[in-house]
Length: 125
Image (cartoon, rainbow, N blue to C red; front, side, top):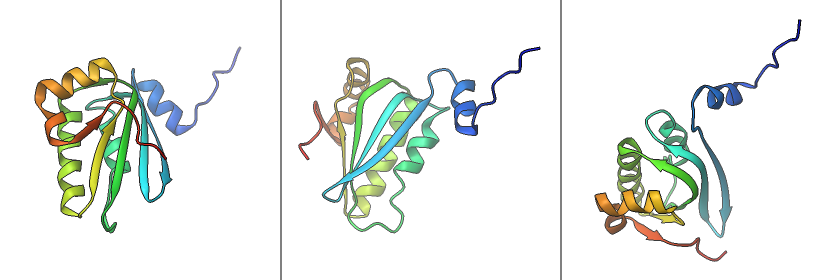
């Protein structure tokens, strides 16, 4: 009898959720760049929320790279608005970069692109 391969907990979590989300964080010149891959929705939003936590950070500067995000629902929109408010209150700045066409459409329809700085490309390093 063939044994089913065991997944690491983070792999199992994504395997159970169609359209999972992965977040990779890097930093350049004091700017935290969060590269999101997948879908930002009710099921995956906590990953992004945790990556956006600025508790104890003075004047945080964060860019969310949306080039590989395929879907954004209302909970993702609320998450971005909340993050923008917290980061702004901490004296920082949030920028959205490189949204795909479907994500840009959602951002424009709800007016997020007027509230949060949204650019077609990532800022130069």
